[in-house]
Image 1 (cartoon, rainbow, N blue to C red):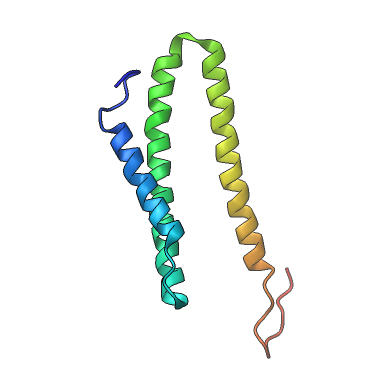
Image 2 (cartoon, rainbow, N blue to C red):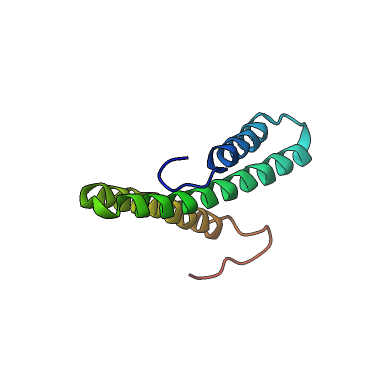
Length: 109
């Protein structure tokens, strides 16, 4: 494989995509099916994140002599990181804005 990537990179990516596709098309009924699909999606996303880390190392090595390419890569990596942090913040604020349980007194923020 070119650019210093491991020989198994394409195979690993294909397996990750297969897991992701299986999770996305999982149509098991009931909450157990949803929980299982969510777990599969989380596994696929974790595997994808690991692939991005590996790809990041490869791109940085290959682009070391190309300032423009490296700058573009670094910009795009910051965008991906920012989007993931933004999604986590939104999820946390959504959880904190949830309605209090019936019969409880809401806590002041």
